[in-house]
Length: 233
Length: 233
DNA sequence: TGGTAAAATTAGGCTTGCATAATTTTTAGT
DNA sequence: ACTAAAAATTATGCAAGCCTAATTTTACCA
Image 1 (cartoon, rainbow over the protein chains, first blue to last red):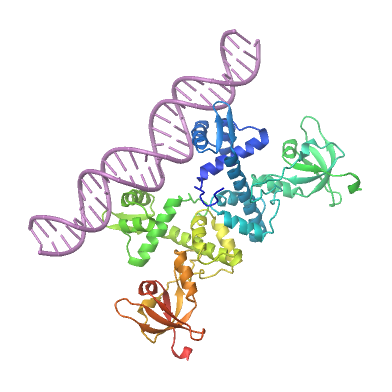
Image 2 (cartoon, helix red, strand yellow; image 1 turned 30 degrees about the horizontal axis):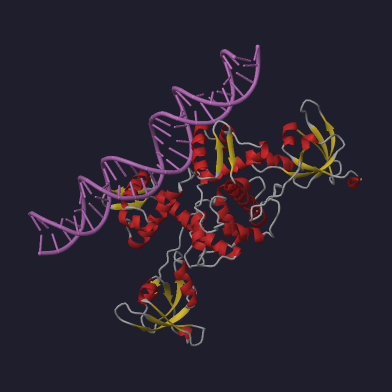
């Protein structure tokens, strides 16, 4: 309620909340070891921090069971997500950053900017709903669009889909995707799928004759929406 | 020489270097107690940090005598100054901040931005030489313009001068200055000076009939250059 | 030159956030 | 149900940075 009295969380705290949010979204729960791996920190360090976070009322901790964000914790996590994604959008749009290099810069800036600066950046961009990697940007009030994407790895042969979201963390991976023509918005048809988690062959729309092959694991991380077939004819 | 291998200083370290640089510029030397006052930290804490900084080769410490930046320390301090001033310029120019509110935001951001982002911001602004408060911006190579300003408090009655630099830290003070029409670039004539550190009366150029009175202490902090009299006739 | 005030440092303590080693709890397989 | 492996926690310890209280050094003045 009180917008002013933000005790301002530590950088570490903010990173923990982000990691827990991500784990909760992906797998429903956040285990100590998973947090440790996300943050590249030893598990006992996580145990210690979890105690502090739960004493601050940002998470709820069931010992030996895992951790959940409280409403307050989720609010902070979404705020960080907003910061990160607005910053990425701003750096690309206004300062000429490449999509494979914004993440690192945003990772540092998100802890330093004020809410006011974020709102000014967002306004300067026309309040975008998605960041350059296709991820939805939470609103200033802490709402985030529920996305219902399907991984490219699950689209059957003959299926037509549009790439929506690619994740922003690995810049080499992003450069590779760009070299394949795979950016948010790209529409493609699945031409073939090898069994045993084998590669997937795509035909990209609008680039006559451009076929590309994508490994299964990579395809699993590419979030897509199905497209009506007739729209492609 | 190696641009990549920056161990990246802590926020605290960066603040100490900035404070020491400022004190060296002003009074030639930096004493423990002066650093403590600048940073609003207890003197023994400064003693402790001074030991660490001098072990890192950023400052030279003569016990009980004071502290001096090494070449490496000065380089870092100037880099921080550049960051701060480029950020202030950018926030005002591109994101609509007021000149009395940029300082606080820059104070946090300067520790988080990369050199690359600073260069991109500077380029987007056309590589400005001065920040919005009139302070010279060090170059990316660590050179800073030697300014030779005279405090408004030392300009004799009848003297004509141009306000150059006002300092950026106190936002109330900045709002007050703006309300008097005193911003970098303002040209004025000293109409009267009371003795015993009394107030100074100015006539502002170009705003017919606008006379303002400024207290001595405030005038002492307003850096000006003298203007040829005939240029004003 | 002695004595005191100011400045600086040392001594000792606290919190945050990390680590490793040891221990406890949970999970899963037979 | 028992037991080994996996997961989590507790026990300790460390560095950075801050604090207050006590001590040392320097500076200045009569």
